[in-house]
Length: 170
Image 1 (cartoon, rainbow, N blue to C red):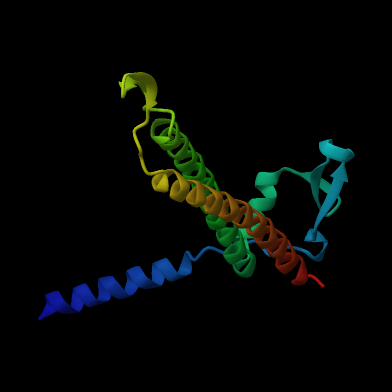
Image 2: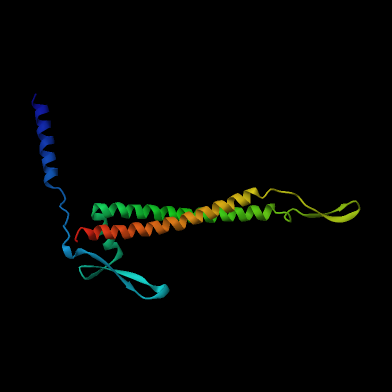
């Protein structure tokens, strides 16, 4: 009879101990708005991040964005779409290479040999279908298009995360 009581008491105190040690997130101040400052011009343009007028690294900004739940969702979407963009680029490269190999081995001149036809030297062609090469060229084009779309959407999600983060202070 005493054992279940002590187990219940132990679980109760341990849950209270865990609740008492709950992480208190540092609340950001209103001067915590993230601002982007463009640096350079033309092809060499990049951005610097400032929070409260102090220069911050990209990683520091990413940590702040991940702390705020709505912007963390958008950052995870941005990472996911960027990953799919890189996967699409790789798929486009592989299918383009395979399409090139298929075209090189199956075109009308790939299997031509010289032989005698009715006593005359002639080229003898082996007829192969180029359907595989054409299909893989279409796949490569589609994957390349998907890669550009995914990377553009990744940038949009990142900008939305910054706007959501900054909206809590306005």
